[in-house]
Image: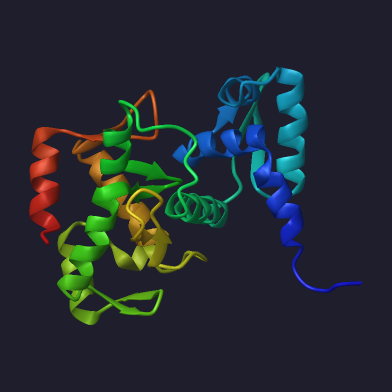
Length: 226
């Protein structure tokens, strides 16, 4: 018997087109009902329930009940990072499911990747932090520098509150549209929430796009220069 992680099982779960569409829909970080996910996958509710059961057994999603409804979400940030990495690999090999459409410019500019910002603006955050030595790199490993802690504090982010988390503070996540890394981890999550809380940006109701206000965009670009 072969030993080691069973990547074939994960590959089979993600590789089914209907399940892939469901997982992509959950990349927005929000919990969705089985009916909403059935619509995203273009399958019946009964078929969707079977797919969701398999994804849950495979550790890719989780569910919770609220009243009469069941809501499904990605299991954790690791599942989100895995999916974004696969999207990046697929895009780099030219495996695109459709030609660019009207929503693509907004998605490529800024979008949700589970709980942090992706797209051009997500990459810009990491590039700016590295250029200003707020974050230092060692291969794919990221770490906040001593001077960087002060810079991040001035943005209104309390690093001490992020430290107890089991997730890494900084993590690079391959961006499928930019083909480069954006900032994930608890710092990436805190920054994205900071933009939302301050009214700089909002989630689109139609896609994973994040829409910045004119004032929010001005502030964002001034805080993350290149």
